[in-house]
Amino acid sequence: MSLTKSDLISRMASEASITKAAAEAALNGALEAMGEALALKGKVLIAGFGIFDVTHRNARAGRNPRTGEALQIPASNSVRFKAGKRLAERVNP
Image (cartoon, rainbow, N blue to C red; front, side, top):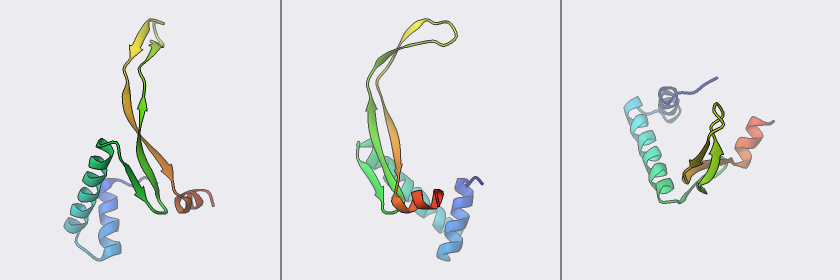
């Protein structure tokens, strides 16, 4: 089963007995706040669900798999997620 943003908004509206517009505004606000925190290299901790944080990847040498040509892979930041206890237990009963 996949859950799209639209599906999530519908579920939120149903569970909280609010309109879809209100659920969408709440979800967009939460996602914006999470994005801002991660952009500032912070963490987002949601108890029982998990932790989102930012890790740094240093620049490194790599190879093009088709040609074997050496190339330089630039440094970058990446978002990492670690499942919380309740989510992990739900996924692996």
